[in-house]
Length: 432
Image 1 (cartoon, rainbow, N blue to C red):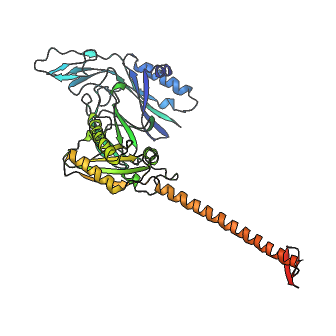
Image 2 (cartoon, rainbow, N blue to C red; image 1 turned 90 degrees about the vertical axis):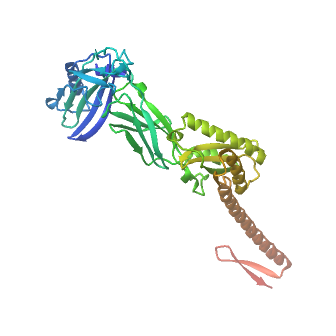
Image 3 (tube, helix red, strand yellow; image 1 turned 120 degrees about the horizontal axis):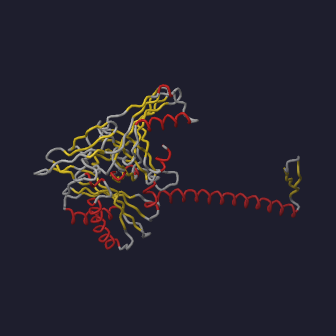
């Protein structure tokens, strides 16, 4: 029965913690709201599953199944403006006095303040649930069943700080009460690299890659799957460009940027301080309208003017992100033309363009990455060594041939007699 519910998507198991004794795994079993299962059914199903398991050796005599008060924090999806009423293993939600129920199909989930509230409505959520505890000889489990029905309002994420190796954020949820459980996902593309369940409303991810794009998602554990909210953030890329061997194959850092920078003839790391702009946390998230609008505005202004000034129709920039103070924008300028352009000229042109758009207080710094130089210098040195080696070898061969020719001519003239001595090919020349 349990396996069937999981395969049909009507049940999911969330690991909460692991502790000693021998191993105690605490996890929640979240059932679909339409599954009307009693405590006895849950108990019998898990006892049977543990008894049949060839992997887990649980002490079934010490297994205890007990009902959990569904109105405890984190085990229901009632609005913070609603009252939760426990009814055995199930519960009901009712909007508080002075609030109107905007979710009549699943009452008490979305409650809005109103002037003249009508009569309130109470509806009982159908399923029954249970919580069990099994302490095993080798492996044991703690079972907690949480019931959910209907969708919740998504959480609101605020990015607090972003550095080269850290991302810190916090969140709030209108429909979740204090003590609710949240699941936070850290994604690298489509790969999940961290998953955390907590009752806190803030988190910090450490030991990240600089200049790398990550997606962080937060959802309320007791809500439906569509309550997940995500932000996409690039960590600070500054340290990526401090190495002189950025484009060499042995440098494996900052792979996101390496391909873009090293595939062009010239690249420049640029940072502009826009003193007349005000930073807000939405500029951290590359998916927000504020980020898209500002980055597109900067890109359009710079690319159009720089193509004219440099006479390079392929000049382009890539905005890497925004940082506070007032607003700091990091971007990369890439040139396709083979003729080198001096970094001071690029900085002068960029300063003129950005000051005309954002004011004379704008400050611009430019660093040349010399995408060719480090690789070219290394390759040129290797070629030079090879050429010198070949020339030295040829010179030795020619010198040996000249000596042999000289001795041969003297022998023919009869003035010298060449006699071999020993077994190692040594010769002695005697003057006649």
